[in-house]
Amino acid sequence: MIKALTLKEYVKKNDKELAGLIVKMAGIAERISQELPYRRGKADTKNVFGEKQLVADKWADKFIIKELDKSGLVKEMVSEEQEDVVKLNDKALFSITLDPLDGSSNIESNNLVGTIFGIYKKDLPAKGRHQVGALYILYGPVMTLVYATRNGVNEFLHTRKGFVLKEKNIKLPKQGKLYGVGGLRKDWLPGFRKYIKGLETEGYKLRYGGAFVGDFNQILHYGGIFAYPALSTKPNGKLRLLAESNPMSFIIKQAGGASTNGAGSILDIEPESINQRVPTYVGNKGLIKNLEKIL
Ligand code: F6P
Ligand code: MN
Image (cartoon, rainbow, N blue to C red):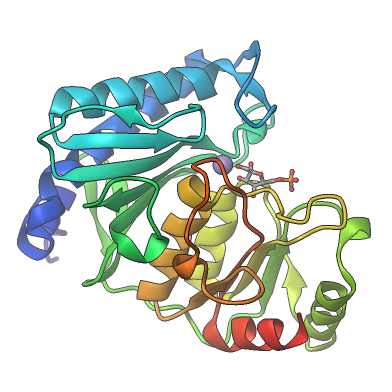
């Protein structure tokens, strides 16, 4: 049997510039997964978006910022749980966006949660297209780490030996017939309703887990489309442009897929604020193109 490369070996060989940062993020994820059983309560506070926080949301946010600060590799950060840009090492090369615990409402039911990072060599906020890398961790039945750079998308499996390579240069399967949509169906706009009806007629099956990381990971592996659409009650949907939609849009693009906010690629949106939300549709290129036509 050929020995699987460790994350450290792989990233040093293939994405050297980001190696230190990605290895650090992997170490952070290992600690978070160990701590999650002990941090399951409610925090009685709300974040900048008015969403109720859990102990785990606040702890993970603080922990990640502290660890990245200690690494000296990060100049500044934008976190879903913070109101302003967090300044770290002024001499460092990288700026980071962070969703510390994506899908944390799944904690109580022990469904999927994750952590999302976007990586830039620019001050924030910046367009998603300026990312040099993006990464997410899925705290699933097995913890996995997916990272993308312009060299491709790679997935690692957490084992007794730490993270080892599962699959390199992942491309979206073309024949996948899955869709997942967040929010209330009754609030969908007419164009989107028509689009989903079309998919269902073609035999597309709904599979929705309630954590962006998990629902995205499903599309990356099986193909199809994930959306947190514009709603009559929330014209910009729910997902955060910087902390959530841009990193995933970068990854889907490197995997041969596409993203849109309904009008064009999410990666081309000039952010007006660090807390901006954006209608988010990601998946196979053909599906995204048809959706844009209908919308
Ligand atoms: O971070 C926001 C989030 O938790 C995403 O992970 C997920 O896609 C979405 O909210 C789920 O929202 P809803 O419960 O409205 O479907
Ligand atoms: Mn999230």
